Amino acid sequence: MNDPAPLTRVDLLHFLARPRNGSSCIEQGLDGRAAAYVHVGGCHMAGKRSKGITQDQARRALNEGVDDCPQCRPDAELGVLEG
Image 1 (cartoon, rainbow, N blue to C red):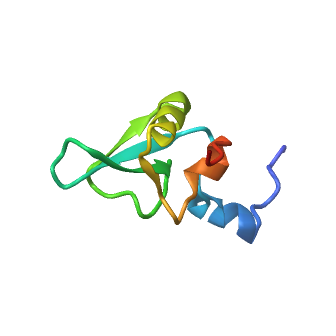
Image 2: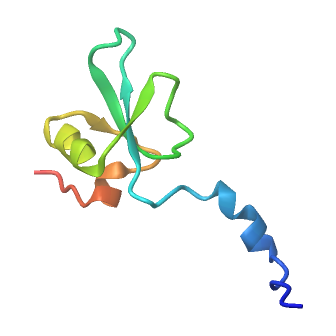
Image 3: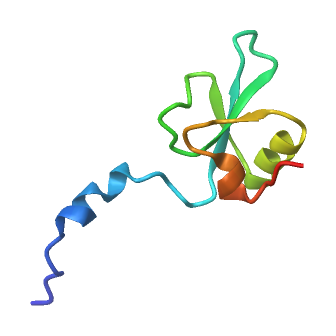
């Protein structure tokens, strides 16, 4: 009776979009100790050495000098400006 509207092509491809739900991750360097990059959650460049972090942790890492991923630009996503 109340069938939902058919999905559009954009709806079907929505899963490919970068998540904007506030998730972030930090990628560890090869030594497993030093942080290498901060990523927006879902970034295709985040490697196997990445783990999820909160937005506050991501901002803190960026402010402490951890590099931002040049592909997903978490600094812009999180509103962190270069000083």
